[in-house]
Image (cartoon, rainbow, N blue to C red; front, side):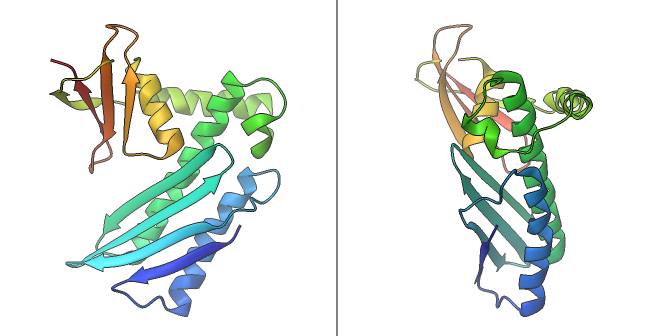
Length: 187
């Protein structure tokens, strides 16, 4: 997998470029064949904070992660970890929902039954982290919140508009800067 590394208000040194390639090349172990699309890495600094944004377009899935910290290398490490968790989460979800051959499932390396159980247990523990920490009321229409959050993460957006199964209204879930989730409901 190739990555295009660009800097905003920062010069991308050879050492920084090599570090990015090294960290994100470990993601290739999750794929049957190396993805043919190129990933985009944007490094920037603003007011002493180093920001790393990574986007990896794949067939049917857009992986995206971002992190801000005072150290550029720490931000790169955090984004690599976030992307690895996203890929594992998608693999587990796909192995649960899409048992047929082909489609998105063929994008990822097949797992043994033991690996699937371990990943499902880890996902169940992480599902507790899908905590709504702020609720806003907005004139819209509703869907199932946890599924909407998973869908939002799968497409790599910061928000997701959905029809709520429970109350038949339109709702919006969104990702906050602190990594938690918010829900916008109709008044």
